Length: 236
Image (tube, rainbow, N blue to C red; front, side, top):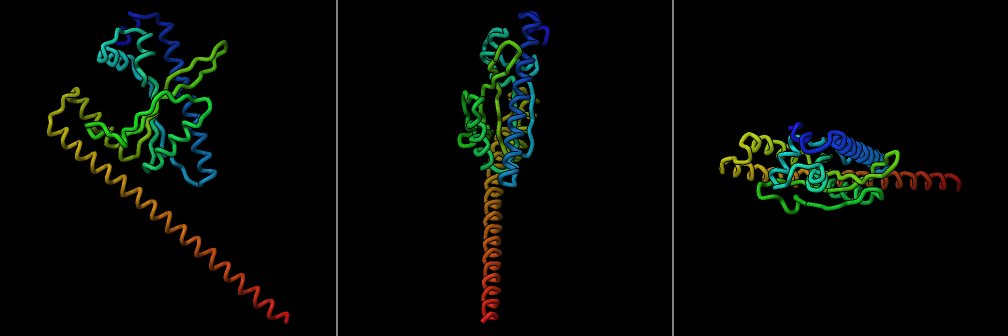
């Protein structure tokens, strides 16, 4: 399929475009690593479990252009295929997703082009994820090129379901039997319930730890006050 790209466009142009997308992934990946390290430094907690990155293959790009009815060209590829450069953030809890999305949106040199919240508004298949399309400036020797990157943020459970769904539909080329689609939707509901329970459990654990810390501080304060009273009494 790479030959199809070469047939329609100059090879050097293709290489330049893919260089920009690869550079954009590096830029976004570095920013996310820094945000994660800062969060660990300030809050003693890492919201990101792990990061996945990828650049679409020529085959996938051509398929998507044809599927959406566009002529195969580099111009159409850049204009109409928004997920050529992709970064996926995997979190433990749904609360982490919105926290990370806010942190990413506050980056001065990232421009948020669009947001698709498939968590509050899941797809009919049951798919859940938070998608951000951002533009990142790539500084070259003689110019600055704004390049699009799609950032997907989801929990471990959401990612497990989405990966399995992708494999199943890939085998059926998007025409899976209805009973399989139904089973997948039921699994999506189970995943959603699991995420809710795990978030609730985490909040309960944090509340328990806060109460223990308050009790420890209160006990220590009482001990100090008692020691001070005894010392004062001994001076009298």
